[in-house]
Image 1 (cartoon, one colour):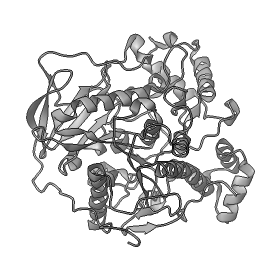
Image 2 (cartoon, rainbow, N blue to C red; image 1 turned 60 degrees about the horizontal axis):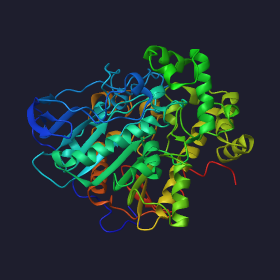
Image 3 (cartoon, one colour; image 1 turned 180 degrees about the vertical axis):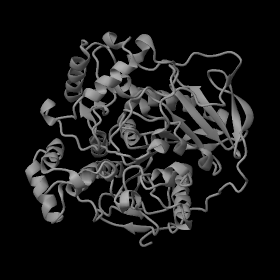
Image 4 (cartoon, helix red, strand yellow; image 1 turned 120 degrees about the vertical axis):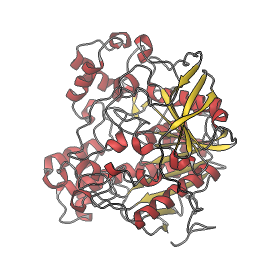
Length: 532
């Protein structure tokens, strides 16, 4: 490693459980603001599943702001995972098994606005708290996925909280008569629950870090700019997110018009109250990819989800990165996160082009559409990439330009945050390459997650068409997972992952691979995405 500072060669050694895995057994009873819950003792930590942080979103509440969960009498069973948010099956990943990341098929039930809490010991106090917001394009996913196991964090002194929030149409479709960004409001409600209940699980409500990956990181970016989130967390982590992915209200309403035409419903919240989830899911599958012709909006995101945080003038009045930039220039507005850890993977878009084979068979026409969706000058953009990557086919060009335009949104957020007074920003690029799909998957979107959670041992992550590839984890992979996890633990604990802070001048960025190296300046693997 080069250019690192004060102990950046390696974060503090991580503590791994050396005890043999054993069956879970009944755990302690904890009193929360809603009532008492009983969790589990499991592999040296204590786990509490399915604790409601808000009331079930049913009836008129389905498209309303989250309401407090009703209190209960007696001791609530928190020993088993509960329902998850209704979500469509996503088929955009070829034959790839992403279930460790996305979770099992949805578990039915209305009361899914819940948290899972994993703690070293409810009898302790003052521990850092990490609240993780899952990804999934705001369409799918759950905090109950196997990969988000809180055991490794808890065994190293961090209380991990994962959560479910409203997805898809209930969470993100713009509807007159309903608040915008309902899924974001859910996450804010969960953070309020953490502020009120962290001490009951050994956590310190003044040492909360909110983290997210992919769509979860877009939510984190929105939280950095949303006034109601002020004071609910001290630190933030953005993994493969984007500070420029919010959509204007006009674009969101154009999606609404498409959806209402497909369903044959008027664009009013009350018209959707009783519509069956299966009908909503079928309409989602019929929705075409977002087209700039709908509203003139250019979308730098990955994938084809129609949903993004909405610039509604209430929670968001502009793109999160631009809101932070304005606050830095004007010295206005509270700083929601004193420290920010932010980064991307070197081959983000490969998750969307490799498993289904598009990297090989993509046509020039499809490439043109991808560029037009993302740039006001698509011809110049493609000329830039063809000159930069001579001999590359449409699929490879699409993979690179989508990755670059997406990662540019993270750099914009890092630049803006680092300019705020009294803040520290830490940047990374995750570069370890998966050998899946004949060594083509590379450092794709999501590949850092098993390393952050120190769960590279999960069997479903390994195989020719699995996230980490066909090879079983060797000592190098295990060491990289331990080291990456240790950096995240150090950040949640002390606000410093162990390397030089980022600023827009030097742009110090840790390249995380089997060998860690601190680089300065824009990474050579990713430009701005747009020609000069």
